[in-house]
Each structure stands twice: as structure tokens, then as C-alpha cells.
Amino acid sequence: MLPILIVEDEPAIAELIELTLQDAGFAAVRAASGEEAADRLEGGRFDLVLLDVMLPGADGFALLEYIEPTGAPVIFLTARGSVEDRVRGLRAGAYDYIVKPFAASELVARVEGVLRHTGRYGGLLRLWDITIDPATRTVRKGPEPVELTPREYELLLALARSRGIALYREVLFERVWGLDSDVGPRTLDIHISRLRRKLGLGGRLRAVPKVGYLLQKEGDTCDFLPG
Image (cartoon, rainbow, N blue to C red; front, side):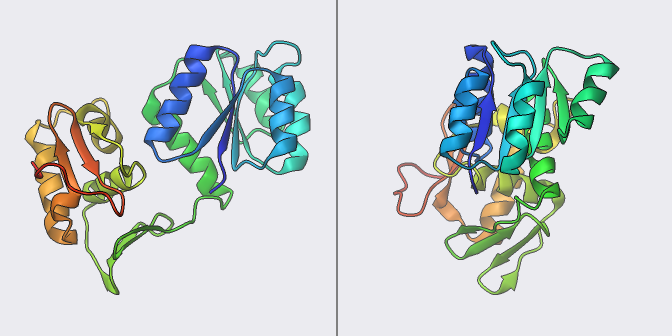
């Protein structure tokens, strides 16, 4: 997959978006102005542009006309919440519109939705002898299909997209069960245990003390026992 371009002039927000995308397994590049974004677009290709409406110099609506010939879909990011602004953005060619502030899980879900809708999210994920197909939500170990529950699949996908990165328990709960879920703390541990057993992951799916869980990259060594 190609990287996602973040066009946002507020450094704290841009950094938060970048970290959120990286945690979800997406590569990201930042631009703090319309001019910098134009330079980025001239110098590279992107699967998606997250575009703030209020930018120094040219606003996001003006930049959208520059992005359109590249074929990259656009999601507008803005503090404006009026119906008129949302309609203007969508009519100008944006695929989606997110009003700030927004939850990390909402951002990731909308990014995934646009990428899937535009056919840019169909790549297979491979982990050792395991193949994950996000388009069909199927998993195979070698040639054999593996039956996972929807929660097990979402948990595996979250870990697979962040290979080599320790994900906090809270992050996994949010991505798999949602912010409003009332499931108990042991629920995550049970699902991790079932994934290890069904996919033969053993110590490659590791507990990180006082943090959460990590799915190691190929070639990494196991420094501690699974929890």
C-alpha cells in the first residue's frame, strides 16, 4: 500500500493522527500547509489524503482541486460541523468528512472504509504460514481455512497491522470491542489464548508486561514468554 498524506497545520493534531494511523498499520506522511502538501503530491503517490479545511494560505477546498488529478481519495478533517460545509466538501469530491474532535477508532474505521470502497485495501497480509484477506475477512494457515469469530478476526487484524509494536490493552479493547463495551478485563486474554491455539502462534504473540500484547515480526526473537 502507498502512504497516507496528512495535511494538518496543528502539529499536535497531525502527530496524533500520524501515530493513530501507524498503530493501525498504515504508513503516513505529514504536510503543514497547502503549499507543502502540493510539493508532497508532486513528489510521490498516496492512497489517501486526510485534508484539514482550515489551512494557512489556500484552504482545503482549493487544495482539493489540486489533489483531484492524482486520483487519491480525500477525507476532510475540520472543526466546522455545519451541514453546508459537509455538503460543500462532498460535492467538491471528498469521499468522507470527519468533524474534529474525533475518536481514534472512528478515524481508522473511516480510513479503512474509503480505502476499501476505492479498491486500495485489498492486499493480503502474510504472517509466517498465515494469510489474512481483509477483503473477504478470511484467514488461512497454509492451505487450510481457519474459522475465527468476528472478535478474534478483528483482534488478529489489529495485531497483524502493527507487527513489532506493543499495543496497549486499552487500544485493543477500543479497536475490537469499542469504547462503550462493558466486557471484563479477562476477555482480551481469553481471545489472545484462542488465537494462539487456532493459529499455532505460541510465543510469537507475546504479552508485554504492564502494556498489552505484541505480534512479533518475522525474524524477531522471543524475549519473554506469552502471558
